[in-house]
Structures are given as structure tokens and as C-alpha cells.
Image 1 (cartoon, one colour):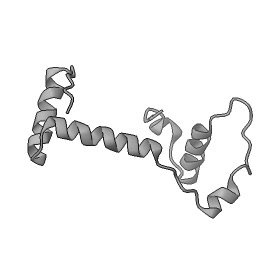
Image 2 (tube, one colour):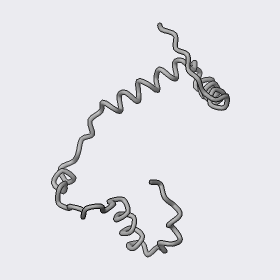
Image 3 (tube, one colour):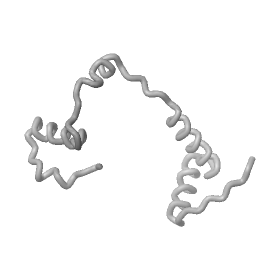
Image 4 (cartoon, rainbow, N blue to C red):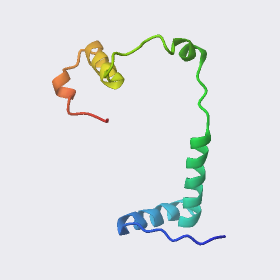
Length: 92
């Protein structure tokens, strides 16, 4: 095995050690599994169902339109929620 030295703030190092101890493993083994999982997810292909595949390309947004904002506004309207009340909750 090749040795690797990583740098992290002390709180992250403590967190990593605690997580590894809870799992009964080492930080090195936990890091190795993490990298393997990230690589596997990156290489995984997402299978699109026939309904989604058939619907793709049906709608074309106007230039400069934000699909997420359009969806947000539609959901707020559908559920009769006050846009101003929820305008501070943004995840994008």
C-alpha cells in the first residue's frame, strides 16, 4: 500500500476519527471506501424510464428561463403557498 498524507482542519480530523471508530474501521479504510463509492457513482449510468424518455424534448424554455424557478413557482401556486414567506428558502 502507498502512504498518503492529507491535510484537514482539526474538527474534520476528529470527526473522521470518531466516524471510523463508530464503524470499527480506520480512517484510511473509510477514506478508501469513500473514494471507491464516489468513483462508482461517477461511472454509473442512470437508466431513464420510458415515460421520461418519451417526455424529453416536449418543452422548450424561453431563452434565459430558469427551469428550477419555474418549477418552484408552479409548486407554490399549486399548494397555494405565499411566495414571500418561502422566498428565503433557497437551495440553489
